[in-house]
Image (cartoon, rainbow, N blue to C red):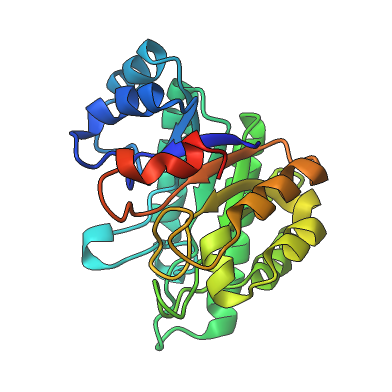
Length: 259
């Protein structure tokens, strides 16, 4: 089976955030991720990682005003300075937490923003972020998020679109963050897609579809998908990023029983 991590922004939300590290370890996870670390001091997060023997797998670059509906600022030409400041903030946290991968959210392109200008801004920002992370020995991930259900208008909504961006940037430390849930919504054919894209995949996340709940609640055959990842030799983390259909402990039968 793959090596699994728990997304603490979605799992164990019955508990306060700092208690979720212990709950993840008690459940058997060895790695964790979450959307953003920035509201907590680095030393507090590092303490929870160390005391529970956990690896910080991934987190996102600052993504604008999340509570107001922003989902990334990397394609906004009027916020390049803010993006670059966010890269530096993320690097500080990553170094403190021993995290080697940071994800970049492209954002939702406003109808008033020319698509070609948004694309060139995204390319330039990713180039900058990749260069800075390369100096620190880190990887910059790019995620496609479905625009049909979860984030209408998201600028990178297919794996092909992300691959187009990776080709435009042409940096060795830029990878595809492949989310099985989002790509099932947009594309399907998951095993064949992963097989084709494997050389560029730096991180994998999952939830079942529809509903974005735990494996076994929807249409994805996770036993086959996880077996394919083993067969293909994928050696990265696979993160549970789903909304439990009841409480988190009850949702972990897939983990206890090997999907």
